[in-house]
Image (cartoon, rainbow, N blue to C red; front, side, top):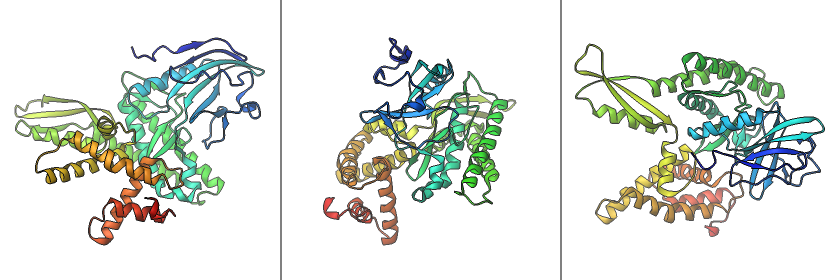
Length: 412
């Protein structure tokens, strides 16, 4: 049993009947629990104003030091239910917000339950991708991100039950987006998920996504002829393509075992970790085998980079960084005239390249997280190298990148 499998119980406080919290987080006892969340303004110095999507429930954000938490008021019993669902999803390695705890409160409006989650730093609600011109480069990746999230949930036998743009937050991920589930109120974590529930989830997704986009049309953020229903259907097509890739059965001859490695590598390239490979003899064919691969999560490069460097980044960011580590490994091997371990190359990359570069990038005034900014620098370096028809090097690219952001090269 994990250390946090039994939440800690706190005594009653003003307005607070009970709370159950995971270890390592604040006790939240200084909050004005006797008031409904929407009345906390002026009564709580910890309130933070942050962007968020639509919600059927009152939501506020509170800060404890550098960490911000989201509090959502719900009917009695609902917060504990969602808390347990989010924990179960996180244990399956799924991209969901971190469940911190839940509370039962008594206010002038009666009894309620409150779900407490950790605010997803640097996250973007979907409407910001359309309302902020600086984020326009990420819009096209929204479809892939949502399709990928649904595939991950279904591979882990999770029925979302209310897939929508409102219930999703997005993180920048090396020029793309990573989607995170933030509302599990209608979800189910099952031992198996049949095609009927998968299709029901997709039907709901199409309806809800089209509705979210039409809301932007009504706001004037999108043109009146914006193809909302076509885009929602496109997410389904992308889902179907990705689902087919991760769930297909391959047929191979007994002497084609190299195809097993090819299949695993192809899935790894998509970010999927492979938990098990099964081979069975094809019916009626003595020299033919059926290859089935059990996919566990979509964090292959994240896990690899973390094991090598301790860095916690998104999947596509990790992919770019692992590629850099491998390039450096090859360069070091040529310099030393011997093979260099991946661990040694990763350490050299972290200490000599990544940390000094991120320190220099901190001079840029931006809300973009350091890992994403580093990947933007790599993209800038690629464009400069393409124009020069040679590798311009990281130092020259950094100087140019800082200059473009109004930072004097002398600060490098």
